[in-house]
Length: 289
Image 1 (cartoon, helix red, strand yellow):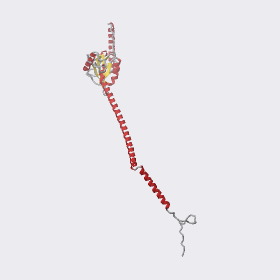
Image 2 (cartoon, one colour; image 1 turned 180 degrees about the vertical axis):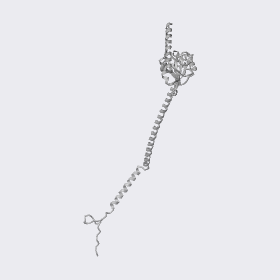
Image 3 (cartoon, helix red, strand yellow; image 1 turned 45 degrees about the horizontal axis):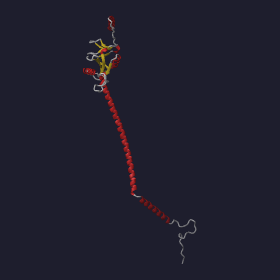
Image 4 (spheres, helix red, strand yellow; image 1 turned 90 degrees about the vertical axis):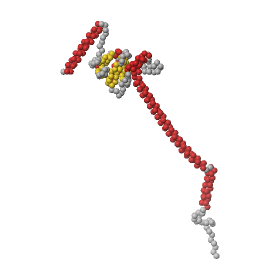
């Protein structure tokens, strides 16, 4: 029953508010004004802390509002120059949104502790209504930041990519995510250093392998040179004349041994044919007295 009464009360309030808007439009048209009420997008609602308590904020075409909790929060997006997201890191569960107003003398307004899952939807909404936004990982001191912005605006270099002395700088509101670009440059430098280290290691490995191959070649050449030196030393021990004399002496010794073998008597003095033997092989008989 309580839920039914709540739904009926909400419906009655909506009808009264619709009647109010119609009456305001009628009065505005009588005086030559074009007046239109902006209806928030309930599906784009997100929770945040614009003051001290967490409330539900609802974007519309021209505003970001919370009209259900005190104090009310109304941000006219036509007065916003730029929007910056702070504390956007992989480890963070929440982030903050800072609205930089076109009137730089007014301090930027912040909505804190927004759930990280709503980041993409808020960025899309800001892009659709034509407001630029940047993303950073740190919280700025906005009093000092706005002083720097106004100083560059007065010097006419805020929308330029160079300082008056000619040095380069981020253009416009990109100065807010300069820390992110610096970190990216540092990552690039680190990756370049790692690449150089790997290249140096590869070169050192290649040089070491070449050195080892050269050393092995030198060792083989040393072994061959030592072998050649030993042969040369053996050859240098005797001259060619001495070697020829040794060869002739060995030939004479072999010939002498063959001649001695030929001069030895054959075994068994008889001839194979059974006839007369040789005089040298058969002694003569002496006569009897």
